[in-house]
Length: 396
Image 1: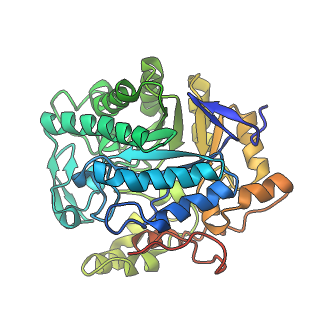
Image 2 (image 1 turned 30 degrees about the vertical axis):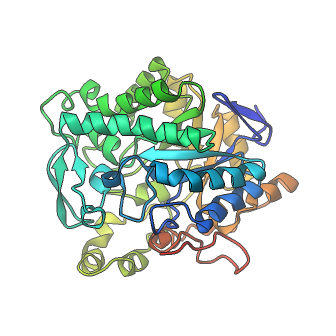
């Protein structure tokens, strides 16, 4: 069993340990550019001992943002991105940029551009209809991922994470429920996977081995008729066979239809409703329990699903979900996972890993209340953190 706190290689990159700060939207880019708050958000867990921190969510195009304040990859963003990567490197950690296109999860009204989806559909987040992506749109989005990866490389990032999950655009194409197309991008899994596989290949072709490339892939969408484990394993096999990625981070849930399937723990309905304007606020209060379903929290809660992938693949895998203590990290290593990813626990305690290194019996103070999740609209933070601890709120 490898030591989770010992150095390890992720593709071409040497990390000081096997613990990755997972991507959590920071809510700290009011002008869609890097801010001091965003830099501090990532500097703190880097100083706290993680091997790598992941900047979320670096949209590859303006309409690919979830909303207009989200960072998107362009020449204007490079100076700020370089300041961020330098700050993280100064703390001894590596840094990854999560690249993606929000697709049907994008707020078209906020972005001032139509949101793209496999087919025309109603978007309750923007109260507008998504536009069905044309083959030309798909080619443009794939090329935009390659361009964004080049910007990441030029900005000093060590890795990129391509987002193929959560029913963002690539994940929506993978979903049998959301993708009812009858052309070359719909129907069979081979067709539905063309967007995801095309993105991964375009990124590899653009940057080669200059950076590590990670794919974030849903094991299950957590909704009836969505992507299930058997088909997801086949997508993972195709990524492995293509050689386009160095590792896969296994995730679950749909930001469009069932986000709490990923988070587990309490579903903070009132806080979510308060974060939205009318009429979305009223809709969440009336129908929110259908969208924000509560799932019991337990340690390593995605491990049962992830074991199927570990048995089917040779590719390094990153275990996400309920990783908050040394015992669970060691369990992941015993089960054959190459890395573990943490998120909410590091909002409460950015230095948690250093304290675990000093005392393996250290317990996380995260209560899994998920009140941090609605704060993405005003600056992602732990609402229970002490004034001198946890993540600092970003500007809204």
